[in-house]
Length: 378
Ligand SMILES: [Zn+2]
Image (cartoon, rainbow, N blue to C red; front, side, top):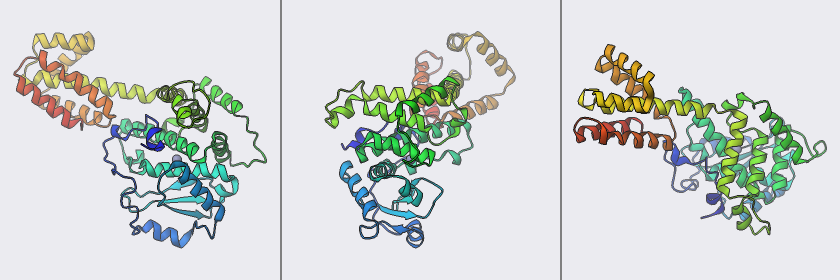
């Protein structure tokens, strides 16, 4: 296991999404048939040791530190406005190119540039480009969850940015320069005062617009990196001679909570809402496996969902025909299919417990569970 696999942020876990990634991120990368590459070769300058010796050196340093193979193409493109780098590992992966803007290179020193290069290499290695894009969905729950994922991906990539340049300070400086657009001439690198800004932001209950942002706020990113550098795993792995303050798992939880303080609990709340609706309609589906909602089942339902919901469910069922009940169940499960895998597994586990207590024969109850499992996409 290399350091990239070891130190991936635990909330950036693609097994939670309904996607399949390539086993090996390098698969097909050598195939140079991509249109993207053709376009880049004609409009940007490819980084070679002859043309850009310093940039080339920075790239070599990164791959040496990360101990992974470099078969990516790096380009510099003229852009004096945007300080950014992009990793365009094409979703279906014919080739991977990393594009650095001229402004980025002007602004950063060698070490800082290494952190940005390593950050982009991480996006390639982790196959982040294969994650479904939030803007490809129209379902609010799915959009919120995918954006959460996209922010988690940045936390992973920032870590590798740090490991690839070998300096925490250079990584943090690069973040500040990229966010402010300003050079060393203007910036004072007193990190604790930037973290004061984060405290202030949390005190005013964060910035809810960040709920729709693909990147975490730069203050959260800086704090996440500092906490990572304080983990036992980081310090042991790199023999820093320092003792860590907590386990990596704990650091990940702290980071997740800190991001939530800034963007709000909205994602959690709406996920919980979907989970509870799925549990309610899933129970009804199971109880109705024998076409009857018996007194005993009504009691079980009441125990799980309360008096009020049981009353309104009973009056709904009195008026509704079997088909409209099924439509309700199907729609609820369609929505629940956009949740993360762990939530979906929870729902099915909880519902499976009802098989033992519901009326009706076991095989039709089990079939209902099977059907629900398919519609929730598990
Ligand atoms: Zn990124």
